[in-house]
Amino acid sequence: MRPASARLFGAAVLCSVLAASVAAQVSAPGASPPNSSGPEGAPVTVEIFNDYQCPVCAPMNEEVKEFEQAYRGGVRVVFRNYPLPMHIHSLAAAKAAEAAGAQGKFRQMLDLLYARQSDWSPSKNPERFFASYARRLGLDVRRFKSDSESERVAERIRLDVERGKSLSLRGTPTLYVNGVEVAPGSLATRPYIRAAIEEALPKGWVGPSDGPRFEDYPASEVYKGPVADVRLDSRRARMFRTRLREDSRTGPNFAGRYAVVVWGCGTGCAQMGVVDSKTGRVYFPPVEYMDIPDVEDAEVRSQWFRLDSRMLRITRSSYDAAGGYTAYYYLFDRGRFRLLRKSAERLPPPADDAEN
Image 1 (tube, rainbow, N blue to C red):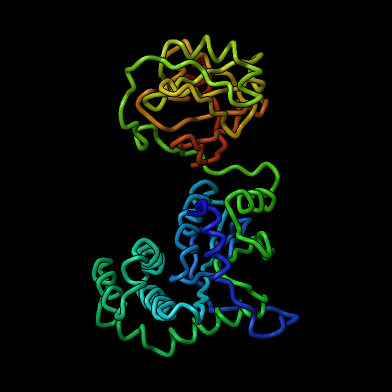
Image 2: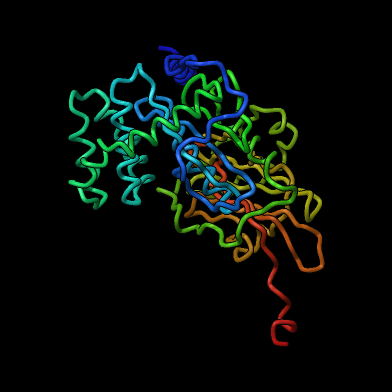
């Protein structure tokens, strides 16, 4: 069997389709108003063309939800319908999404269509599934069915398809960040998307300060077995092997089975490694340099990481008089750091100032 990445890329190729006409000098506008999420005044607009029966679009929807959360307030997502002829139920699914949108539940229906794609896609009668999803979302099912076959819904889909053709769309999913296609000619993967968003965000942009909570990402269990020897599988792990070995001996202090090890010269130049107490494998977070927490102080440490949570909070000081810093909230899951939020925060004022 081919690796998952190869299978996904192959599916992406199968989902590709040549544009039906030469690109127009001015792109067609698409359905208006478009189905979207996020503030209209956001500095970044991500426009995504979807085929709900496309097997690559389903996992892409999960990536969209992740970057919406990570860049909350900075990104607006515009959803376009682009049903491909090779997928016999894709047009019906697009009609279902638009019909749900007529009752204010477009995004909820979109999520269900992707989450249940394996149920309705092979069916000879996918409409019965769509009706059940409408019921589940609390929609007026009679109106939903009527809207699905309406001229208004058909016209909105036609306008989105026209926009895709005017952009010389090659397949689905295709994403544009502020009008620029992400990874043209290939599958737009997470690194390409995140890099395009970061590039488009204003310099120094950070999101809102209400960060995720540790208790929202609990660890499943606490490892109580013997602590494994540190595996020096990477150049960086070998470079800091002494500190990694010494500070991980006491066992897990993060996410149930991991030991967070921090070293460095102080604020702004600290580094961190996460050692699996069970296997000895070492992981490094995407933020290479950070503020250094006092890992011996339980109260301070609990603001960065906890034994009973898979969330990791990392800060980088802004070196301003008001105590500003940027906080990165990551979910650590199966050896992968997933950015949950990036936000601007400030240190609380000294006790004397607070009283005044």
